[in-house]
Image 1 (cartoon, rainbow, N blue to C red):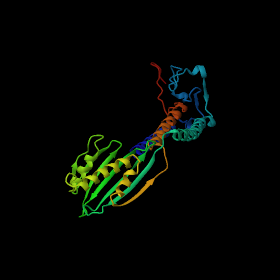
Image 2 (cartoon, rainbow, N blue to C red; image 1 turned 135 degrees about the vertical axis):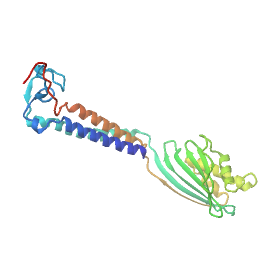
Image 3 (tube, rainbow, N blue to C red; image 1 turned 30 degrees about the vertical axis):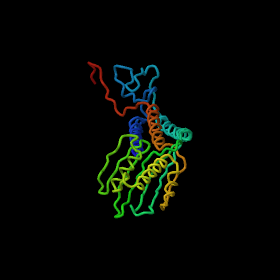
Image 4 (tube, one colour; image 1 turned 90 degrees about the vertical axis):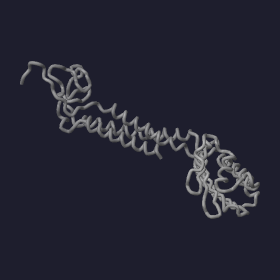
Length: 291
C-alpha cells in the first residue's frame, strides 16, 4: 500500500513537471511569425546586439541562421511529444507485461480454523492467517491464534512469517510477552501462550499434548502443509476450516516500481524532445551603446 501511494505521488509529480515543461518550452502563438534561431527555435529578440550566440542553445546563429517560424512549425514540438507519449505507452505496456510474466508468482491466501475441545478446559482455539505464498510455499504474512477461555476472554498469540517472530497479548489487551527475536517461535512459545490463559502444560498432560499439536499445526500452515490440521482430529476435537487462495500473481511491488520507472523515462524523453524556448529573455546592450 505504501509503495502504491508512493508510485501515485511520483506519477502526479512527473505529470505536473511535464506540463510545466510544455507550458514553458512550446512556442506561443505570438511567436509563430517572428524570427527565431533555426537550431533551437528561440526568439531572435533574445540575442544580444554584441554577440551572435543564441542564449538558449549556445550556438552561433551565423552557422544555421534565423528564420520566421511558421504556425505549422510552432506546433511540431507538441506533436512530437504526443507521438512519443503514445509510442512509449505502447512499449511500456508490452514490455511490462513480458517482464511481469517472467517474475516469480505469489498466491494471496487467507484462512480461518476453529478447534473446539471435547473437554471444557477452554472454549476453543481460533486461528486466522493471511499473506502471500511464493513458489517455495512459505507464507509471507501473519498468523494469529486466539485461546478463547470459558468466560469468552481471549489470549492472543501473533506469529510473523517468514521471520518466525512472535508476541503474546493477554486477555486484558496487554502485551504479556513482547516481540521475540527472529526464529523465536517454537513449542515453548505455545506453552507460554497457554500459560497466559491459565492452562499449565507442565501440570496437565493433555494441555502439553495440545501445545505440541498446536505448534506443529502453526508451522505446517506457514509452510503450506495441512498435516497439522489433521492431527487435531485425532484428539476427538471438533474442527472447522475455511480458506481462500488466489491465482498466482507477480510480486505486488513489481507494478508500482514499473510505473515509476516508465514515468521517469517519459519525463526525460519530453525534456529531451522540447528544445529550450524562453518566454522572455532580457536583451543586454553592449557598453557604450544607446538608443
